Image (cartoon, rainbow, N blue to C red; front, side):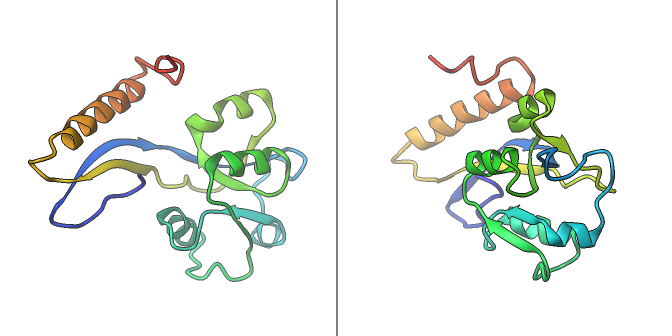
Length: 161
């Protein structure tokens, strides 16, 4: 999950940090010119739900707590958001590792915003109950997989079996 849970009985294990980049279909905007704020407000922004950490990061990025003037299309699924961005339905901020293929093929272009979007940190969280040791063991396995992926030792095909 993105972010941690601050509860006394919850154990949070940091998995990895992901770089996010602003992207859109080349049919929506050219990627080599920094878009103006007016242009961004005229185009649909594929957004995460308002109650999410990613939405808060987007609102902070634009220094607009209420995102006034932006045309938001709220999407709860990264996969759906990716498909909508490729189709030209709007621009979005997505994890670089998820969209590397679309960037390399030209289906998406990076938008040259003046500063990078903040790295997002993902966690495994579980309720610590000594009577149920499987939770901690599963978190250990998940952390090891995340470490292997972060170190470049493994990718999504490694675990396909």
